[in-house]
Amino acid sequence: MTLHLKVSDHTRGIIGRSDFARMRPDAFLINTSRAALVDQDALVSALTSGKIAGAAVDVYDEEPLPPGHPLLTAPHTVLTPHLGYVVEQGYDLYFTQVVEDIRAFLDGSPIRILNQ
Image 1 (cartoon, rainbow, N blue to C red):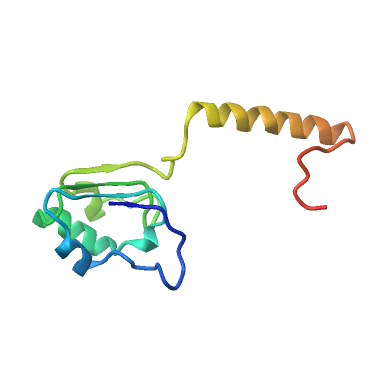
Image 2 (cartoon, one colour; image 1 turned 135 degrees about the horizontal axis):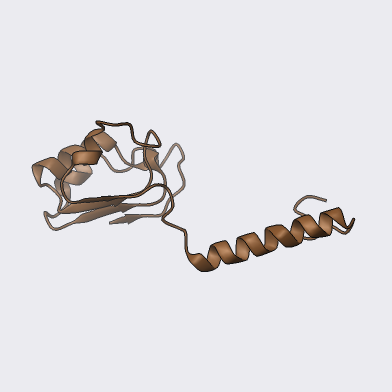
């Protein structure tokens, strides 16, 4: 299961203990969206009890995860900082455009104006 949702009153905690209990034991949870979508205690419990096969997560209730956080030692996890969206081409484009934006602003001809 992979999550691609915004956090709202309707989606906060959308994945909890009962959801993990209904998942197959070969299921994986992938959350690169928002931490508040998943009950992290329930996720740790599902991982340590073998209710699910594993998880890949790059969003957390507390970032960075503090030393000793149970997710850090949960089995079958891939944990990354909130950088799941990063690709080299994205940074190339971003930094090129930032330099262009600054140069144009300093020249008195701003480009890519967001709010007029």
